[in-house]
Length: 233
Image (cartoon, rainbow, N blue to C red; front, side, top):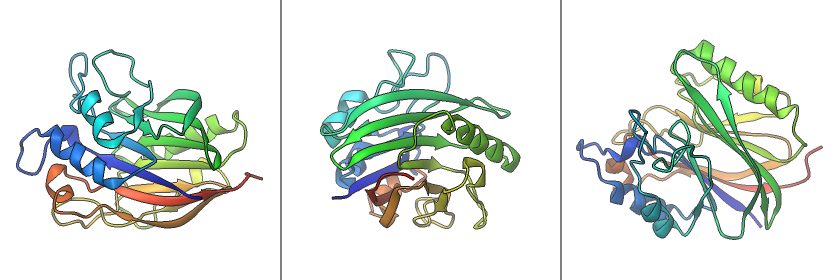
């Protein structure tokens, strides 16, 4: 059995026509058919950070359940990041990880009991400056040294333009993969959205959700990865 992971920077539901249309994001998510979806920029940046993507709309479209990372009842996520999982997947441990940088950044971590076994998924939206991206990955790697070994995926918007950008800060055993060009959505050139696979996580296939709807709903295309699990060593 395999699991399908998805990452999508929804750009606060503002499409390339500069219109805020959460229904278009919901349509893209519905067709992506993910078991686990990690989202970035789901909330507005100012004030109480209300959700740009309504909770009910996202859950109804996908059949997935939102995990409780938000600190505010009006937000969908934390630092604009959210995670949704299929009904057969149960969270066993959730954690928000504050990350260093010039602007507030954070990662969301979920350890999950899946039909395929234990899996850890970490959602990231890394900084714009390379030095801080490396520090942010190192902070995540340091946190993982205090957690049990299990297959781990660090997935999201890495904001990394270089083809040589690595995941060394996460620690030994992680391999960074860019499923395809995902930005800008209308004419994708850069592989900003990536997944780092740790020991026990086997990447079988991956790609972008490159549809007409996805090319207009946000400034990023979603990425996906089909994975299998084995016990981490």
